[in-house]
Length: 292
Image (tube, rainbow, N blue to C red; front, side):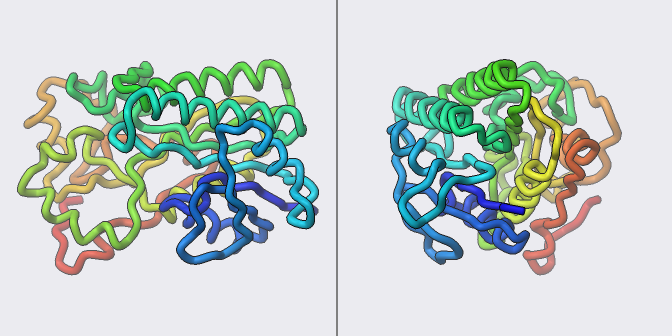
C-alpha cells in the first residue's frame, strides 16, 4: 500500500519532528519548505505556498521526485502573532492554507492534516477564559490576526468537506511547540508566571505533536474536525488552580485539575484519535519540582 506524504514546513521545529516520526512509521516523506532542514531525513524541495501552481505541482508530482502523494501534512506558516506584521501574517497564512486545501481537492487527496492553533481559544487571555480546562467546545475567540486566519482556515476546511463528502481535513490546535532543548528555560518561569499566562501555561513537546499527526493521518473517517493538542501538564511547578486563582479568579473549573495538570484538555483527541502525550519537560530538567 502506497504511503507517500507531502509535509509543508517540514524544516521547522514541529515539522522536523513530524518528518522523523513519519519516516519511522513507514511513510515516504517529501518535505516542502522555503528553508532546507538542518538535518535532512527525507527529500527536500523549496516551495512557495503562496504560489498555487507550485503547490499543485508539489502534490501532483515533480519529475522523478514522486508521481503523486496519498496524504498532506500542512504545517508551514508564519508561526505566530509576533513574527511579522498583522497583514503579512494573515495574507501569507490563509493564502497558503487555501492553496493546500484546493490543491488537495483538485488532486483528490482526501487525507489532509494541518496545524490549526490553540490561539483560537482566547490567546493572549487579556480577558479570562470562559472555563477550564479549555476544550473544543469553547467558543472560538480570535484576538489577533494570526488566530483570525486560523479561525477562517477552520471554516474553509468545513466547507471543503461539505463540497466533497470523501474529504478528510483535520485541524490540530497545537499548543506552544517545544523541543527538549527548550526545557532548560522552564524553571525560570516560576519567578514570573505572568510571562506565560498568555496561553494558560500550556505547551506541547514536538515529538508528541508529531504523534498527534500520525494519529490524525490514521483516523479513517472523512469530514472536518478539530482537536486540542497539548501536554498533560503546564510549564510551571506552581499548581494549576493556584495560578488560576492568582490570575483568573472566579473562572469556572469544569473538571478535576490536580497539581500541575494542564489547563487545556486533550480528552477529545484521546477519545477519537487515540492520542496521548508522553513527553514531559520535568523529565529533561534535573531536580525540577513536581506538584502533580
